Image (cartoon, rainbow, N blue to C red; front, side):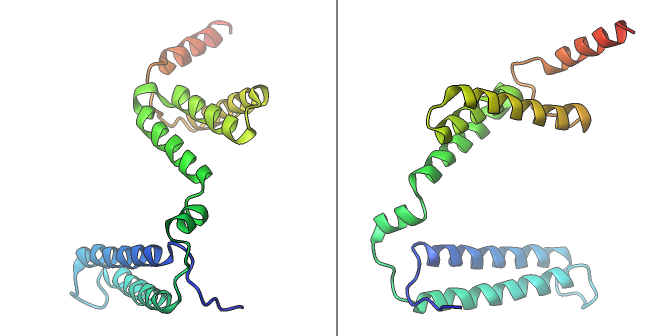
Length: 172
């Protein structure tokens, strides 16, 4: 394994976030039963989160000793936040905002349509085919087979499913 002498852009921020997350997990483990006994319910989670704290602290201090990566904001942006990551972050944000109001079918359809269109560089026929096939597959598996309740939104899915059920039940 080759040791690197320079930090990667964003390495300190990531390692600091990992250290903070480890502290948070230790606090959550402590909330289970505190330091009451070695055989208490929270003892094992506290031990594991303590190991996480030690390991993340070692990694954080090692990364602090490495030389700066240089490049500043442009280096960070090009390696950690390339345009595709930013665009997809915005797509996911828009999807999460519109999921409840539009419903799973319409919000997921629009999300996939825009995402695949962005990745396919504007080939709309293939994009529509992939989107419809994906939404149909996911909907059939999760809504029809596993009966997972999905946000209904503006498309009355329950009424449509009930009408389809009545239609097929009436044809027998």
